[in-house]
Each structure stands twice: as C-alpha cells, then as structure tokens.
Image (cartoon, rainbow, N blue to C red; front, top):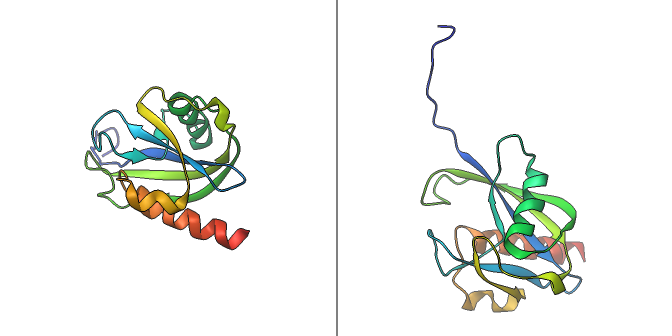
Length: 144
C-alpha cells in the first residue's frame, strides 16, 4: 500500500581507485582497520549520500593517499555479494593518474607503497583486489 514502509536490503556503494604512472607502477595502501587490517588494498571507500562516484573517487584518493588524482576513467564494477565480509558492497573501480611525490598515508591507511605488478604475488591483498589488479594489468597490456 502507498505510504507503507517496506524494508529492503540494499548493497552499499563503494569506489576503488587504481592510481598509476606511465611505468604502470601504482599505489596501494596498507589497511589500518578491519576487515583485512594489515593487508594491502587499492585506495577507496564508501560513497557518501548525495555524492557522485567520480567525486567519491577523488575524495577517497585524497583522504587515503594525499594525492590529487586526475584523468579519472571508469574501469569496471565489482559486485560479488561476499567481496566484503561486513556486508554486500558494490564497488565502482576507476583508473586515475596522480603525482606520486605527494603520496602520504592518511585516514584509513596505515602505510602507502608504490608497486609494480610483478611483486603482487608476495603481498596479501584485501577484498577482491587481486582480481581487480589482474584485470587492470590485462587491460593496460592490451592498450599499450
């Protein structure tokens, strides 16, 4: 009936940002908090109500890495219901460039690092970020 309150379970919306340079080196943060505390992850976080996902990507990149990103490009959507152990999240993943000289861990980041794809097997990655990074690597190899 009209006016009745119906409760729906709705996934949370997040963004992840692959910030990289011309050598395809990229930024990962070491997570300060659970889940996956101490694991490496793409910078990212929850989209605020009233915020576009593009603006959320710019904001989250700045909050976690101190980097002002540019050339924000949509890469993909990741929506497996179990990708985040806290609840069902859908992540919009963006590719972006930024000045690595400005990189500094902040907000939810305990540490920050510049990585290349060849060292990823040695790192414990959070969420489904190993899958995302594998697909980004494949994409970049095709576009070079």
